[in-house]
Image (cartoon, rainbow, N blue to C red; front, side, top):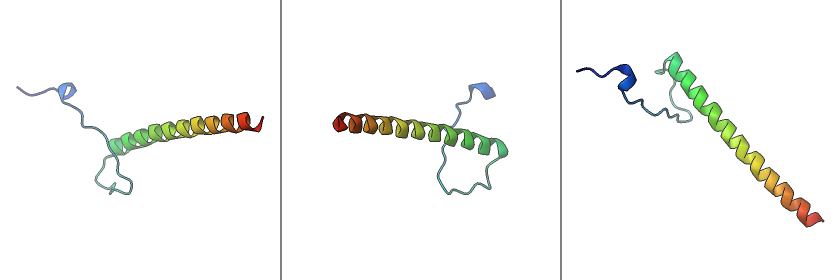
Length: 63
């Protein structure tokens, strides 16, 4: 019995910086962009959190 497309386990999308992109389809490239955009947002949120913590500490010790 054939497995339906919806039942097939999806492979996890990963991306290695600098990898050859020529073998990827347009859809796969779009998935990579979405993955990396989400990761950039996560990294930016962490930077913002750390800056806020640093600024709060600096403000406390200046008082």
